[in-house]
Every structure is written in structure tokens, then in C-alpha cells.
Image (cartoon, rainbow, N blue to C red; front, side):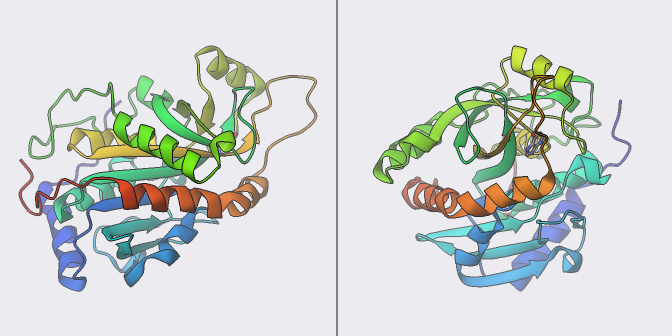
Length: 296
Ligand code: HPA
């Protein structure tokens, strides 16, 4: 399957230039806030914010719980940009549109991407409220050709056949674990494998069992496309899932998941996730090469 829609380098550059005219911030770190986790953006200092609807070229977010704003500001001495609300495949956006902001961030000089999401757990040891540091992913839509990197390759961003082993930076995962110890939340934090499914429906029991057998620890409806595009253009990536529910794997189980429940757990744990991400940003080392306007 091919993405018919293509976005030229010039179009990404136009959006990056528009933003760089409107704000003095030159972000080093970009953060994609998942369902119920958007409050992190409110903690940025010296904010400049833009509704997605005002940014040339940006898609519009349509999901309840996703505000639809880009917020620039400083956090722990680092210049950051937060996506308060992300784009999903199930909203009907093409994958190239859902990942549009990532390449714009690259052109603005971002070097590290932090992705957060809400996810259901398949692993017995992961409970609602736990935080899973993403060690690797299975991109289920990608396995059948739904991949934002399909179509002509733009060599200015990255290679035709990018490696994805190691796409979740090990150093940042180790640092996050160390910070979890300092914050006294080690009981809540573990590493695991995330699977992206297309959604918008939650999994059938047979699908949940399939994913579990494939070694998946948590499942959600986002993240993989952004990580592919970020890795392709050389960004360092850190990802975490907030576990909001157990995925039903048994025909005996009478509970079922719903979006409100997912948002509720997001709100309850948002402070903790926020703390961990904030500390991580404070402690991460940034390679200060200015790559604004000079991708490859
Ligand atoms: N499945 C898929 N996506 C999700 C889930 C789930 O159980 N919970 C939160 N996002």
C-alpha cells in the first residue's frame, strides 16, 4: 500500500520558518503528550503557544482529551516544544500528516524527541497506573505497509532504508530508571515492548492474545509513526506508556475498557509522569550542534 499524499521539503521548511518567525524559542527537545498527559505543557516557562488551526500546514486534532496546541517554553534549563494533542491514524489523517510536526521540529533544531502515550497492558506484571519505558515496538500497521516512510524517500531527511534497532535510546532509558529511583517510584516503572494498532476500536480478545504471544507488553494506537519518522531524520527518541487499563484476554472476564477510564488514569498519574519527564529533560545531555535549516 502506498501513501498517495506527499509533502515536499519546502512545505516542512515553510512551517518551520513560520514558527521561527513567531517565537524566539529554538527547541532542543520536543515532547508529544499522550491522552490525559498534556499538562506537562502548562509547566513550561516563558511560553509561546499556537493553536494547530493557526499553524500553516498543520493537521487538526479531533480527539477529546487532546487540546491541539503547540507550546514552546523552557523546562529545567532546556528549550522545549510540547505537542498538546497528537494526530492519530484512526482520525483519518494520512501517516505522513500525523508525523508532519516531527520533521518541522527537526528543521527547527530539535535533537531529542520524547513520546508519551496511554496504553493497555498485556503483561501480567503491568498494572493500571504503572509507567512502561518503551524498549522497542511492533508497528502492526507497518507490517502491512502502512508506514509514513512509504513513498519516495526524501534523502535530505534520512536514508531510504533506515535501521530501527535501537530506535529507543538506551542511555535515556537508563537515565529514566535512575531518576525513578531518586523519585522513589521504582515500583511503578519498568521497561517493555509497545505495539501500535490502528484503532479506533479496542482489541478483541483473540487480537489481545495474539499480541501477548508476540511478546507485546502494552498496546496503544499511536507513537510508532512518530518514532519512525524521528529515527529516520536522526532524532534521539525516548518513549513511555502510561498504563491506563488491563487489556481483556479472557472470555471469562466481564470488564471492558472505555476512553473515559483511560483519560481518568491519565489524569490521576499525570503528575508522576510529568515529574519523571521533567527530571529526565533536566538531566539529559544535549548535543548543542545547531541543525536549524541544515538537515543533511
Ligand atoms: N488498547 C489500545 N489502545 C489503548 C488501550 C488499549 O487497551 N488503552 C489505551 N489506549
